[in-house]
Structure formats: C-alpha cells, structure tokens
Image (cartoon, rainbow, N blue to C red; front, side, top):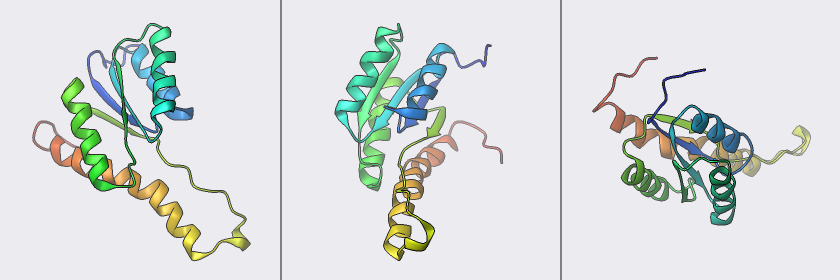
Length: 139
C-alpha cells in the first residue's frame, strides 16, 4: 500500500519498543524517514540495530525524558536537525502503572498524567507551533 510517505519525516515517541517500534517498522516500509524518541539509550540502540538489520537505513534515535519540557524540545530540535522538519508525529511514549481502582491514590493519578499526558504535550506543543509556519492543520 502506498501511503505517499516516501521521504516524510516521522517522529515516534516511545519508539524503541512495543507499539512505537511496530509503527516505526511500518512507516519505514512505506519509505518514510523515522526518528525514534525514548528514555533509554540502550533500548534505542537495540531498536536501531534491529531496524537496520531489517534493511531500514533511514532511522535515527534520540534519548530524552519527555516528561521534561526542555528535554522534549531539545529532542525535537535534534530530530529535525538530522532529518528535517517533522511531518508526522506518533505519540506512543509513557506507560501508566496498572493499579486496582479501589487502591488508587491521588499521587497515582498525577503520575499517570505525567506519564501519558504531559509527555505528549511536551512534544506536540512545539511541533504544532512549527507546523503552522509550513502546513495547513485540520481538525
């Protein structure tokens, strides 16, 4: 299937494992250039080695704690310095702890928001602001 992604720069947060890595593989098969973002350099290195062994050369990795807005912005800048402006963003970072509902405490809710919500916002906010200068946004 040709999704017309050839040469497009796709940034995938949480891209070193799980759903993020699976997304990376599919975008690479479609001809996109892919930047993976993750906290663990070791996991990124393993993912990059695996994807390159499968014949995908147009992939880079960037280690950052996306819970930190400044680190997320630095990662986005590094990704764009390497492969050009990000044209597609996939948010797959962060895993909330599974806790039985009756055992949830306010801190667990706060931790979940930090892990799933703010990691996305810290990348989406600067990306969307940049997109408004060179593309049309719908929705």
